Every structure is written in C-alpha cells, then in structure tokens.
Length: 179
Image (cartoon, rainbow, N blue to C red; front, side, top):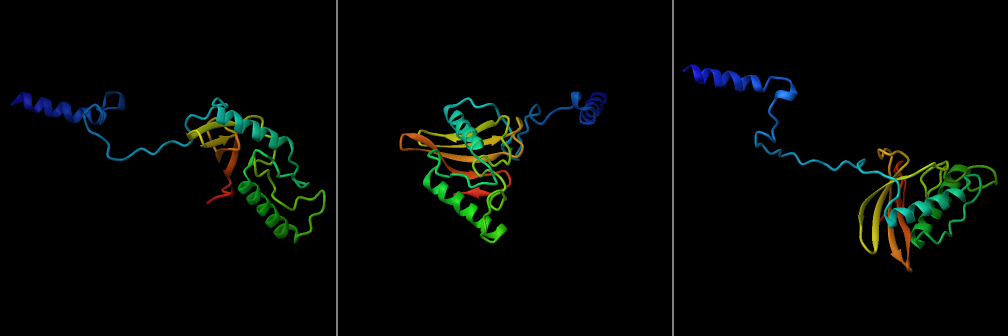
C-alpha cells in the first residue's frame, strides 16, 4: 500500500515542477493534434539561389531608376507585360485621385513609393526567402529585415529565356497583377 501512495505522489509532483523537470507531451508519447503553421519569417537570408540573385538585381536596378516626383519608365524588360500594365494602371489611378489628373513635374501625385521595390527609399540590403520554385516559376519573399518583418511577395516566371517579375504583393497590402 505504501508503494502505491509513493508512486501517485511522485507522478503528481512531476506535473507541477518547473519546466526542466516536467514531462513533455512528446516524451510522454502524446502527439499534438494542433497543426503547426509555418513561420513566414523563418529562413530569411541574403540572396543565394539564382532566382533570389535575379530578383535582387531587378530590385537594385528599379531602386536606382525611381524618383517619386517624376514619371518612372515602366518599360523595364524584367517585368512581364501584365505586371507593367497593372503598375501603370495603379500609377494613373493615383495621379487621377491625388492630383485630379494634373501631373506637375516635381510633385508626388502618383504612387508614393516604388511599386517594384515596395519601398520609398533605396534599401541598403534585401533578405530573401523562396517559398517555392520550379523551372518556370518561383515565389519569393523579400524583407529589409533579416527576421522577415513586413515581407513583400514576388512571383517570377521564366519567359523569353529570362526570369521576369509577374506579380507583386507589397507588405502594405498593395498588389500588382493579382489574379
């Protein structure tokens, strides 16, 4: 009878002791039924894959050629025609809405950020995470933060013997060329 009381006493203590001494559900053979959601901020790093390096180059070029007070030339060959049309439509809408269609050089009437980089300033460095990739398409996230905070999403397609950006979803929720 004494043994049984001692075992019960020890078992009840094991569940109330601080975490280094407690029994985890995995150690006890109990499987969690709650499915873990992937951490979108995991694995952000400097560009390493070919797709990430290509996107980094396109974003770098787009940063160098953007001035919000002047009309940006969106005929960039690194963007698909559908994306170019979507960016131009958004720019024209912003000009009509913000300045009643009167675009005066030196004023910011259109988009107040670069729609390709999703940033108002030239970022010092991008961090990347590839969501998926195959020989004809890739979905990547970029962030200015190594932890992936405020990440923007890019869909790239391989067309005309080169990789091009086809769809952009900025961290501020603006998107271009969504289905």
